[in-house]
Amino acid sequence: MDKEKLFEQLKKEMGEVPKPIENLASLDMNVLMGHLEAQKNAYAGDNLDRKTKTLIALAVGIALDSQGCIMTNLQAAKKNGASTAEIMEVFSVAKFSKSSSAMSGFATAMEWLIANGDNQ
Image 1 (cartoon, rainbow, N blue to C red):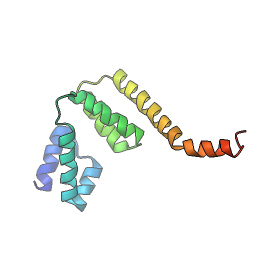
Image 2: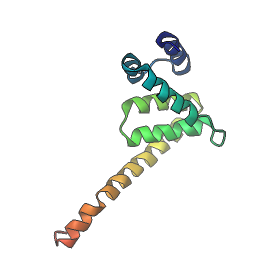
Image 3: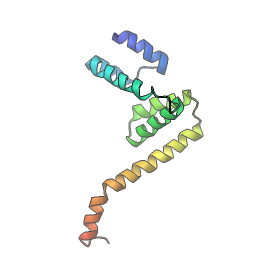
């Protein structure tokens, strides 16, 4: 698929072409097509509905501090029927998960501080 047709399709589906997608298309269409194929596969299964999948993607975007992913998946979640209350609950879970991950990542450092008597 050529870049212009792809952009038309993305505009239909998403309302816009996200800047990172546009940039990647300018740099390497093969990498972009691989990314879009991975997206297609991620959303292909029937066990979770589309709204749930977009809420999961939103939570990951929040946890990874990806502004582009947050906005893209926020809009997709709303388009797929998510309420503002559901989105705010997703934010709370993602924020907690991120802080838990930071605490877990710091676990070895905390153990070192405790073992070295520097727990004041």
